[in-house]
Length: 208
Length: 208
Image 1 (cartoon, rainbow over the protein chains, first blue to last red):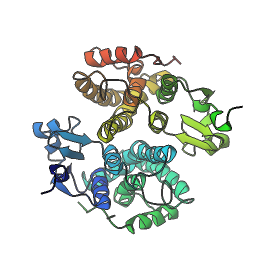
Image 2: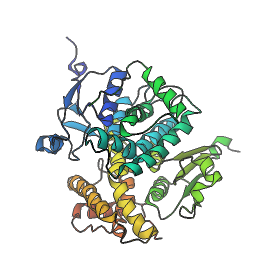
Image 3: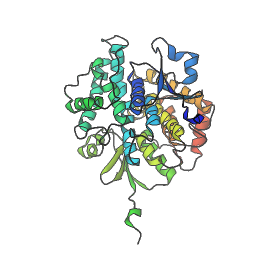
Image 4: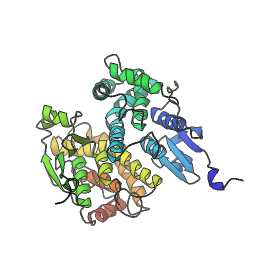
């Protein structure tokens, strides 16, 4: 009989399979070969506003990683850091680890609010005439251009192999066209997307 | 004669003293007792768009931490992680460290885009009639209410002492009134601000 400590319960993920922020968590778990159960959450149907869900995450957002009976971690990029800590997905010395964080914060502040939100308006709300879209497209292209410049000089965001920085930026970049973005002007970015998808465990996000 | 390796050059910070994102970096350096030189950057005057500045940070934003002659780190919260790594400002096990990151990502995604931007419109642009303000105030109050709920149950954001999560959230919360926010409905938040300021090394951001 094995000691109890090795009988780790699988992680549970509360998420929406068509959300890039949730897909990030699936990618990290798949790449690390960690067992998990996916609990589908209907965001537009109000499921993140129920008392049950708010007890898990008072912020009312997906994804949430359930670590044990009483421990829930929100914020997609914090979940990536938690899962990848001590693994090759978040490698290197203090500076290299901070570089990964640099791109994780870039993703949440300068990339996701434009690229993910434009896609949300198209794919979830079906409002292609939404007046916010031109500004979202303009600012999203600023972010895409910054990643293009960076990836013209190196194969992955930090170092020579895929890290959680790539997972985070892959999530919405590979579906940017669904938000009305054209990746044709970004050849280094398109080559990087193909490079990411060639890594065993990586996968495209399912459609909605 | 001491070995050269101990003659560490002081850090250099490129920043705007009246920017909360830049003030975070000053607070971490002061709390850790690390020497640094502050290089004032005139953001509204276009200094972040010069070729010299873009060579340091292609993203064209402050703050930037200069680590050595050729190494520059942007993104305020990544700088906090870099400086605090291995210190009591980012303590604990893997879960506790991820909790700190949870609040750092919350700050950049759900707090700063409303609370800092409302203050920027008032203090930098002097446009109190800007049509974006009502939405910024509404969404900023959602973030303030979430921090109030959290701090009603514990003295600091993670654990029993000040961490970089507190530094990041202190930066714009203690100046939220300059953006038109009223902290009167948030007693736990106000008590936390006082608790933060009582820690040696903490300081209010100078006016602009």
